[in-house]
Amino acid sequence: MRERVKLPEIRPIPENFLKIVGAHLRNLKNIDITIPLERFTVISGLSGSGKTTLVKDVLVESLLKKHPIGCKNIEVPSIKPVLVDQDPIGRNPRSNPATYTKLSDIIRNSYSKATGLSISHFSFNTEEGACPTCKGMGAIETKMRYLPSTWITCSDCDGERFSDQILSKKVAFGEFDLSVSDFYKLSVEDALPLLSNSKYLSQNDKNKAKRIVWIKDIGIVKDNGSCKMPFQKTILRIKQKKINIKGIAIPGDPIHK
Ligand SMILES: [Zn+2]
Image (cartoon, rainbow, N blue to C red; front, top):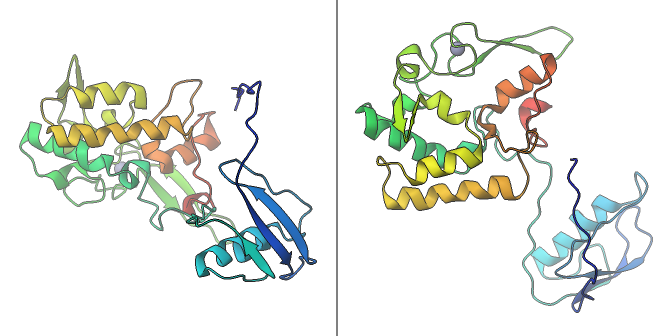
């Protein structure tokens, strides 16, 4: 990332700490460690020194089980641990940030309402909506014996993932006439006002749409300063090899392995 975080002039001194006493699991040699709470703390060390053991198997396990595991004692106020690791957030290569956030439901709702077609028509995971050639993947997989599979952009839908019938259904959002595929290509900044002002969405759906702001806020998506909705990350990964598309890669995403 090119942007820099501005360092605060005065850093508040942490008040609350958790203390792990005598951590001894695997490579850990009976260490004591004090970690400030409500702060961003980094555990660093040589490969194999036990960073993962300390965090995952001692700290998180002890907090979850509410008694010391792999250590003599753990002194901590009552907190709920949340482990965020590199495991894929979904097992299905068809899933993407729009499906995780359920934003795709909102987009499908509005297209269904505007066109009179069913909601499932606007999903590339259904027979009604998907490009019949690539079955909604936007690319065709060529399996190779000793090498990772190669994915070639589907020539029928040109990577758009939807059938011709669905791609021909354009819906007016303000001054733009967009197919559902066009919509998925919008930046987060551009998409939000279109959804907020859409006459095809209920107030409830409009409120839900606001959740996409966090995709931008936490910096998942970057594209030279603007934020792209990374809905087509499968395709993105394929294109990244050919041309320099700066998109996102979700760590641990199965398709990236
Ligand atoms: Zn296709």
